[in-house]
Length: 139
Image 1 (cartoon, rainbow, N blue to C red):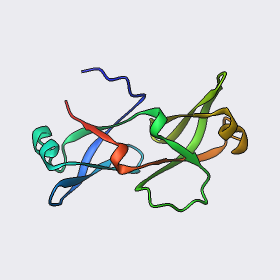
Image 2: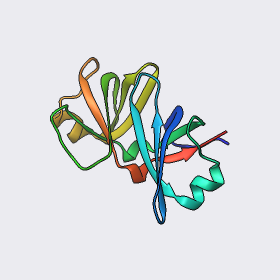
Image 3: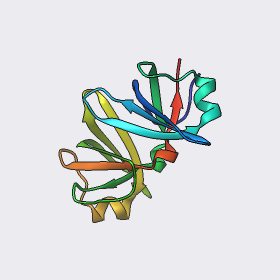
Image 4: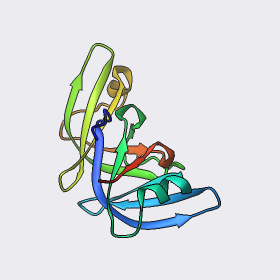
């Protein structure tokens, strides 16, 4: 299967916490960081998720919010690293962060936001992603 989402982060299921309706899935990423997803119990069962199983965290670039290291929020996922590419378009800027190992996260933000944050290659930034915006995929 091919998907259009820019962020397809390979990892391994570290933890599953099943609730009445949803399951929290924690995926360990190369480089030591992790990402949390919230999916339905039915989806977790259909995917055959279990600890140790390889899986992908799939996130649309438009669902990634960038910030500096000093922001505290309720979002479960904050992946910090170095900006390795910052490409400005007519309206939006595409920013690629290397967050550990070969793991990269792409964000598409407005040019105004990129200017306000003074984003540039070589600078440190963090990607904030709500757990409900992370799609899980398996082979």
